[in-house]
Structure formats: structure tokens, C-alpha cells
Image (cartoon, rainbow, N blue to C red; front, side, top):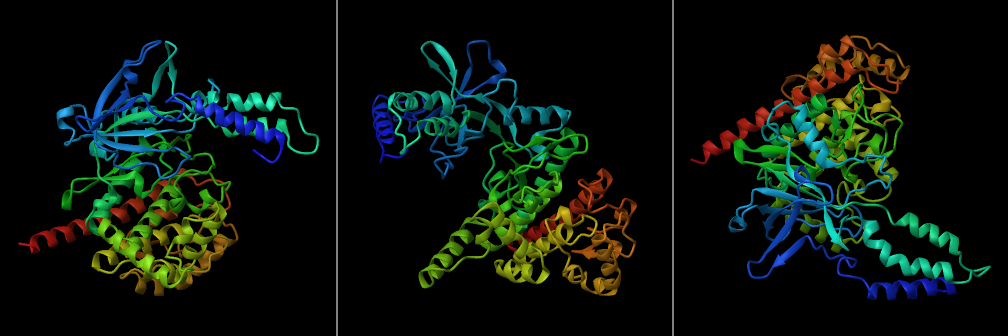
Length: 526
């Protein structure tokens, strides 16, 4: 809108006048969430799709205090979360998580967009009676599209229903104001207006169990256990139902229990997609910026697979290793950052480039930080918090990076790398250095085979000589049963199976050690 010309001024005035005549709903007030001033709680009307009938929608009332988190940005999905209860008398003992969000939708009724409620119910059905809670996946009790009554009709709450009346005066002004030959363009303004009102649908879900955020954890040992649980659940869902999560990030991992009994909970399937028989998803951007894989950021032609989510897990480990696991550690580290910025206005904290700039900028930053052993050590691992538990987390990050970025079985295309320049230095785990020294020549031979696009990598390419955290794991001889052409557009299913199994073995190895460490810590307190 350009108010320096007559078209822009007329449109601006019409827009302001339209706002003055807006209803509460058009101004953004949600009639389905009402504050009770006497009881000091919110009454949240959650749709119940299981009891929906033509022309009506049954709702279930939940009761909650203030949101446990709110959206930080004006635009986007604008997700809010409430810890709620069905019983108003138990509002301070909530057992249900209410997720309120505005995901993208399609105006074409023939197109079925991704719907988290349908996805969760489909996953539960495919698990054939296996408890979602025990698996470590959120369960949807009820939910659906938020509706409200308008002129006696039930209307789905969406951005078009809300904004079309607001912009009606704007459209009229654009149609009635004479065009100025050299200044302004009515046609382009109308086109931009229609295009910029994206269709987002208001959805609300009631989810159980009610988990806690990751920052409530007290130790990196607990974090390791939680992450292991989440990845087991992730791959079980992929195997049983074919859904790829595609958004592994700290906000999408919750915690139940504590100490040795702590468990991870995977939530937020907004970005999940049903994969085909080869278990690969279409190439498209999806996820949370600091934790998106390099291929995802670069919008690579390589179809998305579970390897992208494993890579996201690596970034979660690095991010929390640097900024701290517990809330107290995160607050203390932020204070250090603020103090450093006071001394140097150009100071940038570690990993800052993973969260700023364009997608290409973030991809390049990750390539620099993770594409070479030395830079990974200097730019990432050396910035981890201090302590034995963080040393364990650091070792886990080192091994995950090796499996994903220096694994000759994956090929360059699957790592977002253009060259292999650090394989001879890998890995640097405590028990693996001696074995790697003996297999240096074989590793170089394997790297050369990859660069020439060989379909078979000889038995000298790492394999069983690579020793991980506490013994053979990531690179076992099973890899040699099915070698991969690194220049093909997809990974063979058997090869992915071997990689997944070894990655699971790796992370479960760390989980077992973390449980032992927590047990020793708890017994030493007495």
C-alpha cells in the first residue's frame, strides 16, 4: 500500500474505517476461549470430532490457568499451549495438554491437507493396540477445527472468514478509485491482497499425557535418556504407519517422569507426512530453523528420509550442549551472552548463525561447523558446558556427527557435503582412536571409492574397525551386505535399515550408560 498516491490513500482510509466497524471476532477475540474472573481460569471449548454431526459440532469444556507458552511471532501457526483439566475443581492438577494453532490449509476441497488429529489417530490405529503413552508418543483424546456460530450457521474459524470482511472496504476502494497512469497499480494491489491472505485454519487438540518442557530436566544424563526414547518412538512410527515426523526439535520433545525413570515424549506432528513404500518423503522445506538438516535447508533434490531427522537430533544435542539443558543453566548462559554483548556489540554467541539469515545462510553455517572435524571441535564441541555429564553429551554428538557426516556408506549427496576431507580424522571417541590409526589406509581407499561413484565399497572402508563410544556400533559389518551408490537419488531400503539399527544401537548405548550414571548419583546422595 503506497499512501503517496490517490489509490493508496483511499485504500488506507477504507481499511481504517473498516477496522472501526469490526466485530470482536474480526478484531481477533476468540469466542471459544473465555476467562472466568471469579475462578481465575480459562474455559476452553475443544471440538470433539468423534461426535460431530452435520450442521453442528459437539464441544468439550476444559479448564486451565494462563497458557504455559504462547506464540512469539505475529504471523505463522501462532501455537499456544494450556495445561488443562476436564474438572474445574482440578484446574491446578492438570492432566491434558490443549494445543491451539493455525496451520496452513487448502482452499481446494478436493485437496486433503495434513491434519495432526487425523495423523495421530491413524498412527494409533496402525500400532495395533500398542499404547501411545508407553511408546513415547502423544495421544489425541479429541479435537478438530474450531467453529463458531455466524448468522445461525456453523462456520469454520479460518483467516479468510476473519479477514475478508476487514478487507472488503479495501477491495471496494481499489475497484472504485480511478487508476493513475504513472503512479500506483490497482490490479497489482488487488492481486497482492488476495495472495497475501493465506488460508490458515484454527485447530485445537486435547492431548495426553501432559509432559514437561525439556528445560525442566536437571542433567544431560536425563536428556540422553529422553532423546533415545524419542528416536525409538520416531522409527517405530515410521515402520508401523509410514509417517515421517520431519520436525525433531527441543520444543517438540516433552518429558514425563524424572531421574532414572524419566521418559521422552514426541509431540507436534504438524509437519509429519505419509511416505511411500520406499519410506522417502518429497523434497520440501519443513522443520524448525536451527535443527533443520542441510539437505532440507538447501531444498536438495534428495528425498527426505529418517536420516534428516537423525541429523536434526544431532543439532538438538549440540544446541542444548552449548546453551545448557536445565532452565537455570540456560538463564546463566544467556546472562554471559548479554555481558559479552555489552563489552562487544558485534559479539555473536556459538551456533548463532544456525538461527539467523536465509535458509542458504544457515546451511552454509552448518557446513562450516560440521563439515570438518577440526571446525566441529573448535566451533561446537569446545563450546559445550563443563562437567562429566556434558562430556558424555559431547561424546554422543561426536559419534552422531561421524555416523551422519563422515559415513562413506551414505554418500556425499545425503550429507549436503561437496567433498570428504576429514574421514582420516574420524572418529575421536575415547576408545576408537587406536582402531582408527590401524585402519587409516583402508578409510582413504573407501573415500576414494565414494568420490568415483563406485557401487560397492570394499571391506576396508571403516566397517568393523570403527569403534564407537563403548565398542563396535555405528559401522558394523552388516553395512557391507548392501553397499550404496552415493550418486543415486535414494538409499536402498536395506541400507537405511542397517544405518537406523546402528544409530539406534549407538543412542541406546548412551542411554544405558546415562541410567547407570543417574543411579550412581542417586545412591551416592544417601
